[in-house]
Length: 299
Image 1 (cartoon, rainbow, N blue to C red):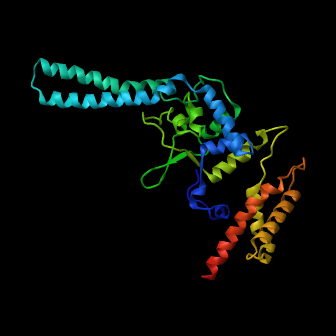
Image 2 (cartoon, rainbow, N blue to C red):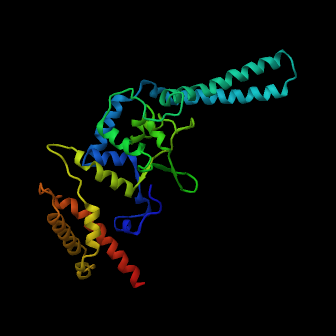
Image 3 (cartoon, rainbow, N blue to C red):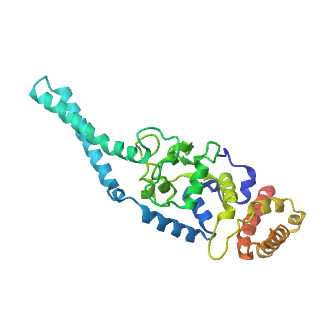
């Protein structure tokens, strides 16, 4: 995982949080160029493989919590009672309640990760999907991108152990829905995962680049266009100094033209280049960056 965001990302950023990209969004971008389409396809697949016991997840957590409170009361009663038949009753009740508290967590951990720390991804209890496997394969590597969550207090990035992605239900870590992610335990404890898991934008771009030839959607294959490289080159273009930043429409049109020229000159052997309407949002972001920079210099 990349540490602090580099200055070059400010070209695309509407805010500092742009560097934290949810995992479910990464998978959707690899699935299809249209993000909504990718999310729909991923959601449909996850719905079809969701284990039956997931419906009773909240019930299991509630039951465990009730046993935990009862165990606490039993411990208080055991501490207050003198040695007698009643104290023996509290003792056995305490053991029973403690067992009821930890049993659901132990069962879920054993089901998902086995009885020992997994050294390799475990077998899946459902059909596999090439794109899920591809993204998870990157996250499972020792030198692969580091997924993380953002702590509620302090807003720090907390990296996950790569073995979190070895479990039998690991596909659900890539779901957009928090209830799906809650099925998978946080390794190696019995706590549920936080609301969202993230990749740094640099890691996401690298993963998209590696996955580009395998993306599919509609007839043929979609190519991952080098928007980032085009923007980097465009930042050094001397024509930027000639832009009239007071005329947004003209400036965005010129930037889009220059993007189009760049892709036309850098097209692969298939001659495939992005459509103009895909370039305009990047042109607008560069315009906003230039406008903001000019405003800051005038102060």
